[in-house]
Length: 110
Image 1 (cartoon, rainbow, N blue to C red):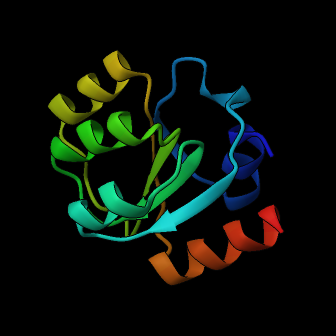
Image 2: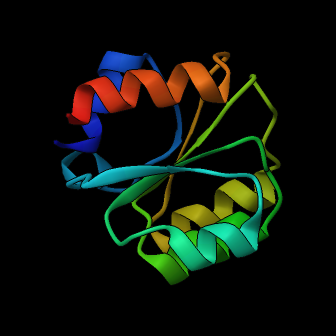
């Protein structure tokens, strides 16, 4: 499935996205613990989290995560968005909870 499909179907607010719409998403990972994401997220995943600090971009880049979905309408600083653009990591925001987003993404990917 393409990231653009997930963005449309889940109604995500895209904050950064160089050429992300055509990124192929192979799965999703839900966690707010960076070390857990580093240990378990897979290349091609979309990451669902409430974290908004700069380190999320570094972890996403390290693991090959194609996009980060930030839940609960949390605000993302401009410095984080700028770094995500530089690294080619899509950042999207939603008012939904992590549980709701995970359920929707799961249904789309299965």
